[in-house]
Length: 313
Ligand code: BDR
Ligand code: CA
Image (cartoon, rainbow, N blue to C red; front, side):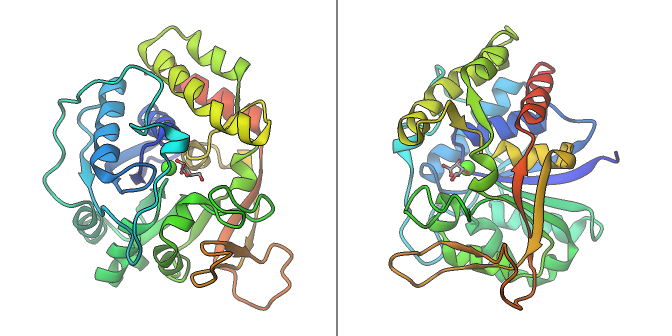
């Protein structure tokens, strides 16, 4: 497999943190050009700090980290401390990171990188609200055809919502940004709740990570111990869903996932269903397909990959 150049746009978040670790543990396949932070699970001041903590834990302090938008394009920020805790990364003992934030704004970094790199060479991986990406697309539409692909965690169809009855968090926080991205024409791969709710960090799977005995293995297990309590209480499942790492796992082993190339539209007006991803799974409209919308995953294969990669750090 040739090495893929990626930019990871994120709002850590324990599951974002695991996604970052999975990417940083896979240098043979992935070249992480930069990590761009956005407000989402917690405010930007914390998401950028958490990204630096994760890179320091992984011993990968040479990856540039940028701070981007601190609020959605047209709405006040909605956060998710009820899921992720006050810091966004509750669970392990946290520390003040020493690696500096890169000077440039995340949106400028995205625009400049896509303009500089050869067309079709950079993949955007989005793990949070799409504010940074849509702002970049708005400001510099010339970068859109230069992207190889955008792989996102966001949305839901059969699983409907997690932040409202109809909407998934990342899309709900900034539906106008999501609409821009889904209408951009960029090749899109979507990891909705339909997939991520099958990727459960059960006790045995978390124990396998802890049993690695390494600093990163234990750090990951401690984050997941905290993260699972919310979803276990809510859904009665065996463990918390590892949403965001699905994006990185897809880049490493696409055969773990199955989906359909369909049309997906974003609801931006309704009071009841704001942020819903209206996915034409059954192809009942003649709307043009704009996304590879995943529906199934080999969860055991996913955790085998994750554990093997975390062991490398
Ligand atoms: C998404 O929302 C956040 O809470 C998680 O980090 C994930 O990106 C799941 O709905
Ligand atoms: Ca996230």
